Image (cartoon, rainbow, N blue to C red; front, side):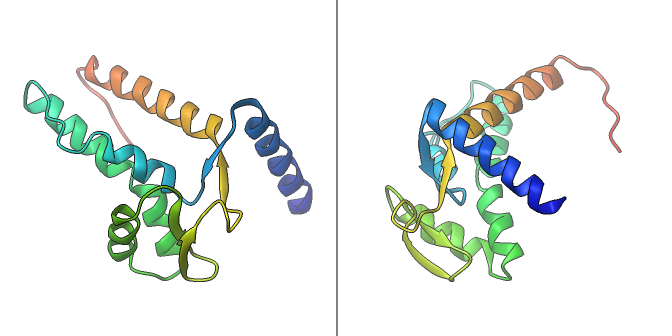
Length: 134
């Protein structure tokens, strides 16, 4: 069952990569995207808070990967952010290098869809007066 699920996941990821291309994996693409909103300020306090939330959310995939590998997320995020291009962290080998050369890739479609859905939920939350969470 688990093997079948892995094969299906790989098949879907391959199709998505063929459709829209690839980006460096391991959260590196989001760290690079985060740089494009550095210094961005909102027109009001609420917008500025939203920008800060987005900035922090873009770090989370890399932070989680590092935490799962037993590393210190803040150290790795800072080192990857200081790099450029495909430079990233391989949690499997505890090495920093070019993610594409190491074969650590993600489909562009996955990132695009995740960002669109996050923006949609964020927009919904701004127009909602009361929300309950579990």
